Image (tube, rainbow, N blue to C red; front, side, top):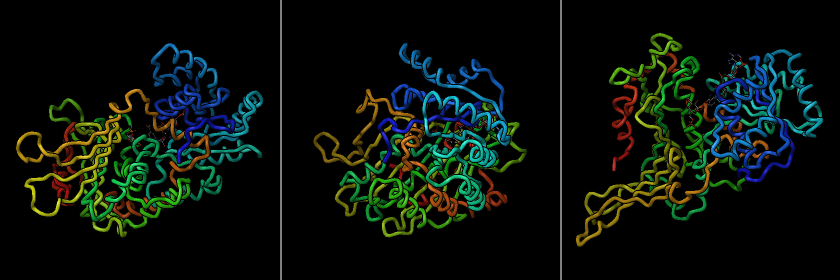
Length: 481
Ligand code: NDP
Ligand code: BG6
């Protein structure tokens, strides 16, 4: 799974929505990273497309805005990278504009001899389909390989996701579509299969006989500033839990795949999701942030782009159960929130109590996989406290990447995923049936939340989250060490 070799086919990359936040913050820096590290053919041309009118100079400023330049060498690379980047403005539903894009593509391809096109849709979902239709009609000539990267959200619920899938599926094949969930490009998420299936010491205890409960946690310090309008329509469950956290869960819980091929891996991911019944009302806790305790940082409802009195959750904890032989009875607690005390994504696997009464006051073993920041895997284990007595002490077997892999630069998730798409590797992209299975778990409870049946509990900006989270987690067996 996952490609590391530079691509063989020669591509032109088209970034649609090139004036937007995602393109600037993630897509262009990732393309630059690939270019700098020679994963992109040096002739690859990158065309930006959006409605905003910009001259090339302004556009290049936008492309470079979030690219980190750490050395003189980087500066030189950036200069040559920008020479590959051109821009064209146009509407998202106007054939004549996409025909103009086609002329531009053909001019470029005459020089570069590229025979493949990667279309990156860095666009709001409202224009996914009009753009896909325009591309199909005007920019899909025979003999040219097409790959289409689509960003989340993939619908609002099961029905709208299926509708989007049907419309997209009528235009492009499943092989041509790459649905991005950028958490699948993160180093520690990609490490999960290796940790589980390449280590006897982990593999043999990875089940209900040894594990008591699993927590997958996502915390952010930032609120929804500037994205309040988008966020209010979706809420934290659709924004983070239904996709990023559930993808992590499927890799933590799936059975070993037959091989590392994209289809074998995704078959197992879908299978495990199908064992999860829809989330029940008693297994969910919601929160919404209010102003910080000192009153200096405003609350969610103070954002002018958020509708008055909105009940949209900015924090959610939900517990799911996997009704199969491996996991029956083990709670998987998913927690995510904005405007919290720290930024952190981690997986915490807590083992059962040691049987018998040989030692007193033991803490439970835990395997913690820290996805970010500061990638690490550590095992919490009991040890003899050094000295003359026989006292026990909880200690860590610690694989912190900053210490062990000090000089290795960890690639950005988007770099890894764009490279996979160029190399036609679907392993780390979301398949249509995976999406269906994911929405089935969340749609019933989301409907109830949208209808106003679950009031979010207020929590202060910068706090640990709503009151009751510790009790919620304890209800599913978690012991604080
Ligand atoms: P933006 O709101 O910045 O939109 C991207 C571009 O699309 C804009 O520059 C604008 O370009 C055009 N656009 C914006 N609104 C509309 C509209 N109503 N109708 C038509 N065109 C519009 O979005 P982001 O870049 O933040 O996100 C793009 C996609 O990526 C979304 O699907 C988002 O959910 C997803 N995403 C974003 C992340 C982020 O960090 N920003 C993270 C993960 C996913 P112009 O007016 O020039 O045409
Ligand atoms: C995005 C969500 O998918 O992921 C954002 O829409 C969230 O709300 C972001 O902030 C988190 O990504 P990362 O890589 O910064 O953890």
